[in-house]
Image (tube, rainbow, N blue to C red; front, side, top):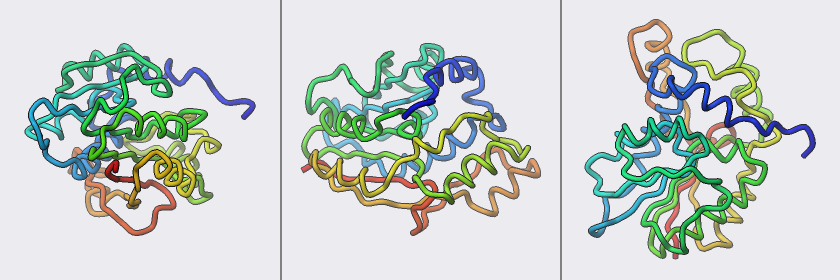
Length: 236
């Protein structure tokens, strides 16, 4: 695609100090990380390893405490990786998520939260996630659907209405939003049958957050997957 930005990394380096601000532009990523953690099973063996791809500042880490994994995080932002190391990640590595520096079947769980919609070939990344996942392991991904409704919600509204937790303008490019059918087909071709779940903010929590009575918002599972969706599956 022509005209795609290639400097998202500079955005996240500049925002590295705001990963843990509950009312900052990255706050919703923490809400989604909490929802993603609900799909992570407890480790089934000693020395089990979990890889979080596009881990950012490590928002996923605290929600995995007690599940029994050694946590690995990969990201391109070195400043964000330092934050991840401070928040529960055992190993962090600066690397391209489209070319993961791990051998086949290296991890018991592989996750990718809110990063597929920022890369030019999300389906190639999904193939990589499946490659480094061991047979019997769990894959969990969440991203934004390539629909008009998602464009309205994630860009027109979310990036322009002046509310707490608003992402920085230009964070998303609708041309990178991820087709659900193609995503599941690619995962299936690499040994993982994904079940899709829609996610949306709790309306009650959202209102409380807007008036300053809550510091976080629970994400609720819903049947529609046309905006924010999560896929989970086991590698056969």
